[in-house]
Length: 69
Image (cartoon, rainbow, N blue to C red):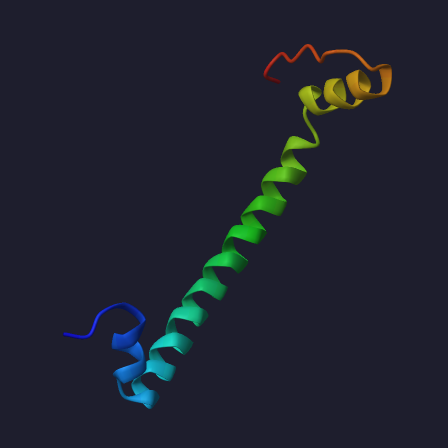
């Protein structure tokens, strides 16, 4: 019985290569979607009162007082 990495190295090279390409394409598409969502969410959070409070607290070297707004 072949297990782990030995199994893929014993498989047909074209099939393994194609499978890896497919998996990499899916992961790339997912990472692009996550990146776009993350940038949008970060942009929205920068418009909140809590963001302003965080910046002010950082500059004033004090603990922030967040209001969830």
